[in-house]
Length: 78
Image (spheres, rainbow, N blue to C red):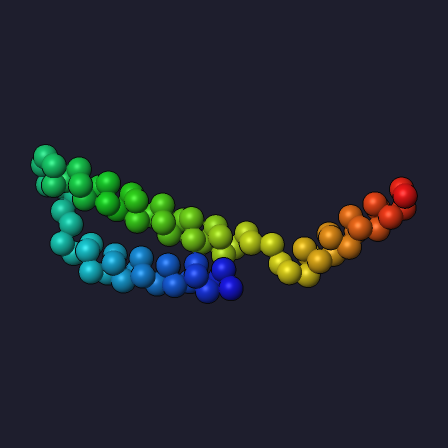
């Protein structure tokens, strides 16, 4: 369920980048250039965060295995 949300956020971020990058001028002097660089940096952070969520989310089978192991260990000490 969470992976669907991550994919949706990546898709929306890609659409925003597709629309905004041609209009941003990184080499412009003053506030316009600073805004462009900051906007692109935040967009890259969003992409990195969502990719991290997709790639490093624990699998359901591994979670079940770990919970079963912890239950077994606790039963052994009773």
